Length: 317
Image: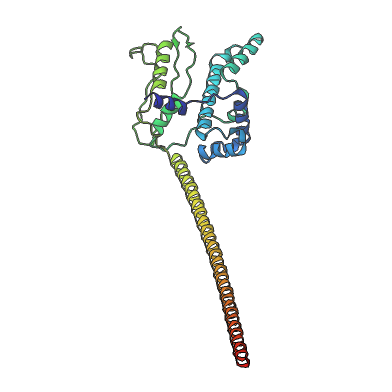
């Protein structure tokens, strides 16, 4: 069990980005900001890693999470500058404001070039008529908490009233007076109540881990385009893998054919060598037989000659 925990700890270990690596990563993203995370974040960061070898050790998810982290720091610095830093207008505090912003977000200048020209870090989509109410609510929920402002009567209010929500469904027109003397005066909201409601709203988490479905025609079109691009990318990868497999099969077939041809050639040479060796052995055998037969005849002839000489010698005696 301890070995599994150690191994799990090593596998899930997080890598801390250095300042140089983070700056290099942002500079490369800044060069490609026209197609930032397009068509998908996976393709964008994969191409970024292929372009710079020093980022090849990071996965596309690690780069995406790093970008989200820096973007959150940039948003926090922008919110602080809008709510608190903007009121410090004295010249002797400008350096303090910038130092604190750089402390909140060390890469603030690069992120300002990347996201500063955009109207919003989270751009709004074009909502349908049915979703106008939910769209207006989401827009006003994204607004940051503002400082309390006093009215003429001395009451302090720290909330921002959203604009009226428009709906395409026909509703009867109703008019309400601006000042109703008989209406019961509402309890003035305090900054503590507004900030508590804001914290509760920000602390809410989605019930499921699945991404929310788009609620507008433009959102559906973007989702369809992304799915189409992912399907095309997957089909291209499968076709490339199939081409590689066919090429390997072809090379294997050619190698096997060449190997069989060489084996046949070797067998043919071996057979020819065996035939030639057999012929030589047969020729040598016949030659040896001929010599033996010749020697035998010569010996028999000499023996007969000696016998005749003996017979003649006996007759003369």
